Image (tube, rainbow, N blue to C red; front, top):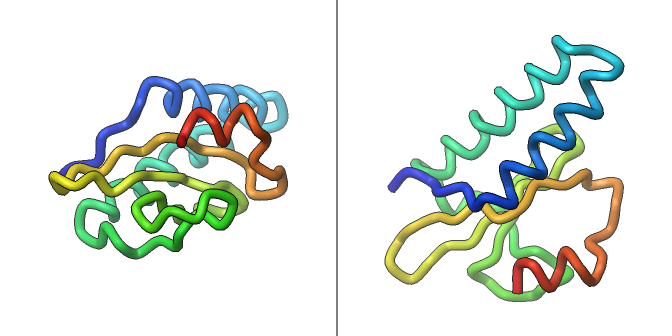
Amino acid sequence: MRPNFLTECFDDIEQIKDYIATYSPAAASKFVDGVFDSVERLSIFPEQGRMVPEIGRPALQEVFYRQYRIIYELMPNGRIDVVMVQSARLPLDEIRINRIK
C-alpha cells in the first residue's frame, strides 16, 4: 500500500526545505527527493523502522533520512500514515508528541 502523508507532514517538509534552501537550493531539492524516496520504500518494507522511543507504541515507527526522522504509523487496515518529519538533532517536544498520539 502506498504511504499517505498527513497535511502537517507536508508543512514539516516545506519548513525544512526552506531552511536548507537558504544555504543551498540544490541541497534543499535533494532533501525533498530523499524524504520521498525513503517513504516510498515503506510501501515495500513497512516494518523497516523502529518504534519511536518517546512514544513507546509499536505501530508508531520511524526511519531516518540523513539526520531527519520520518515518523509514520502502521494502521490496522495496512495503511501507512506519514505523520511527521523532524531533525533527529532535536527532541520531540510535548506539542509534537501530542500531535502524533
